[in-house]
Amino acid sequence: MTSVKRILLVDDEALARQRLRRYAEQFGRQFLLEEAESGLQAVERIRAFQPDVILLDIEMPGLNGFEVLQQFEQRPFQVIFQTAYDQFAIRAFETHACDYLLKPFTAERFHQALSHALERVADEERLRALEAQLATRGNGEGFLRKLTVKQGNRLRLVEAQDIFCFVSLDHYTCVYFGAGAEAICELSLARLLERLDPETFQPLHRNSIVRTAAITALSRPKEGELWAELANGMKLPVSRSHQRKIRALLSFS
Image (tube, rainbow, N blue to C red; front, side, top):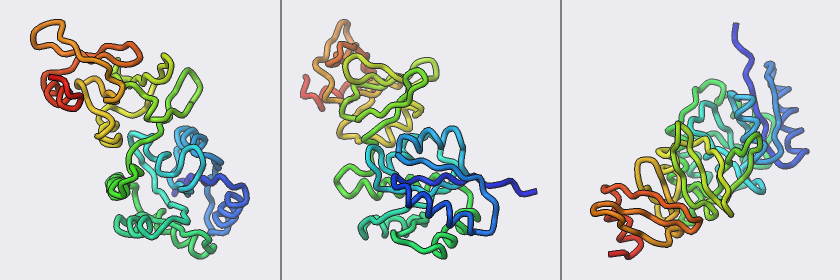
């Protein structure tokens, strides 16, 4: 017996979500449907609902569609983008075989895209290639600029420019930001390095990544050691393999 597919409808406009739900109900197949009205809510729904397919609006306040996808270590779902985007993005979707719906779209076009999504398995490589191509636009769109972090039971949004560093501790990625704030991030350091702008963030060690502008000083307490002092008062070791690059980036001798 075929399991009932889970579909998440993400759009910040209530009428748009109603239209998506109506189109899905007209498909002629039973689905479990959930909705999200913002990017942050979409992240919460994806983690709790574990959808097979996401109808994802790109242009949303706070956290856009691409930024929603960047919050996940693994993305075992199909994505159908909804967009009124420019032709560059449309060509990018087509190049990497990502389904998209160009607004406004008909029920027939919706059903066509959903059929294709249901026939395919999730393909992480397509999403990574799409993000890489969008990053070439020069506006940083393909890089991680906003991050969802967990403080207790609360999910909150942090701007990359407010982050001091990431430190891997006991199988968790800790994020340090703002005025002494600390939270947990779902992404591993390896995945963060793939998605963060390399002109802004650099690894210091296998267990840490720093926003280079947050480094206020470098010190050598012992021969061969190098420590980075951050604007929030933290001190992090710099491994030997990263010392030369960090000194060069910060113009330290």
